[in-house]
Image: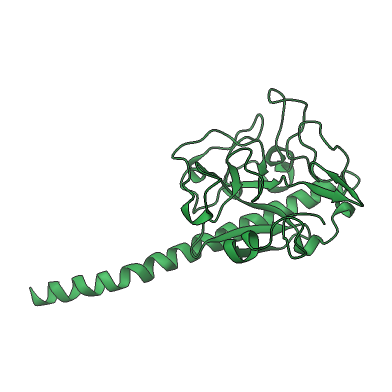
Length: 230
């Protein structure tokens, strides 16, 4: 009984470390996914006269095809690279081969952007809006988020520490909204331990960002903002 008790205590002490190790592994896989997806997005741009991959092509919800489908020739049509292993819903979603609505673990930057002195809706085309923006329109590719973890947030107007993700969700039209834009629930999401979000930048590199210190603390128009194009 003493031995069993000792084993139980050791198991209890080891459990948090095991969970941290598992999450570290999942986050590393997520970052690898984002790196591959960013490479696919840049390959699309390279083969299309520098034009950024659309968030969702077409003119409406009925005929739109998301970036996931548009870059599948570069990353493959399997779902694994589009799934964050820490996304409990997205990791079970199958690749939607007709329109690319799922898996919905990652989204392209939907934030308002500035081209010269003109503020436009997005850098990327979205259902016919702002067609033809080029990679050269991005002022600081290494410091501007292109792709991020996303979640379907039930209460996007609340403080991020209190956010709750919906228990079920449909497909996503390819976008990630950012703080300040709560017009619908598909937001960049701090899915990883320590309120971290994994992201990929317009130069192709991927990194983990502290949601409160690097996203919330530096909103749009802030010189250190990571998601606008000012």
